[in-house]
Image 1 (cartoon, helix red, strand yellow):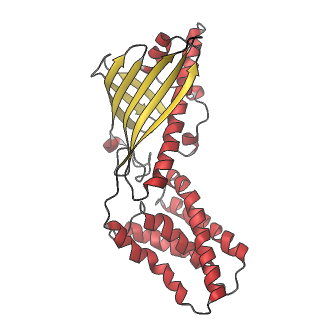
Image 2 (tube, helix red, strand yellow):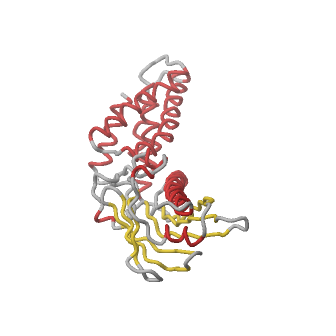
Image 3 (cartoon, helix red, strand yellow):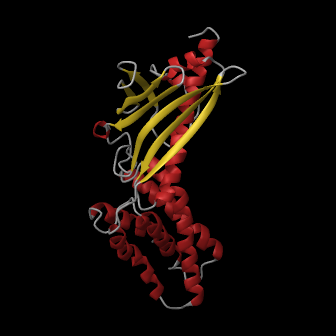
Length: 305
């Protein structure tokens, strides 16, 4: 019953054009999993506490696997949904357990209709816009000029150059290159990502050996639907990357610290949760890029290519 409840409401969220609630809503991400947990446990008139807390996880796993097979959700969305969904399902199971212990009535089952009541209320609110800043850095044993040569324009990144990265394990595509059309302020870098993703980065700060900053314009209309789930498409209604900036800090003892910062836009009704994921994914992407720049710069510093 829990699996059926979850799949019916997921279909409803797609079929009704988000007039009640959409997949990117508190109603769907929190109340529907609570309902799944409740529907899993409530039909059992004598559930145990362990069943109430953990049996809904089985239903959640089956339901999310089914949505991936059907094509309603991608691996990225499922990875982001899973932690909150597990907790919410257990809350629903616990609520059903308590309802069974405290009452013989089936009236508590009316709670299963809560998403249909809460969804239209949530739709009345305009999602807030949260602009976030993510900063990462790495120490590199190379001169500022060498490091600059590796960030002003980035030749194609070979698969064997890439270290493990969390965002790749989640299913996000890997960066390929960032080639600039001309040096200086006003120059445009074409940052290409696997799967046909393209970002146009217009340079706003150009200080060779010190700082490089740019605005980022995601060409979301060029992104194939098979590359990124529609709910996490960069430049879409929920997420965007606005700016990027490198800063090379020379160290007195030699070498540099390379800083990379970016500004993100998150626009959902659950920005606390979504923003945490956006920060985590962006930090992973930036760390990945910095590791590649470090390896290339230090190889050049040793006389390699």
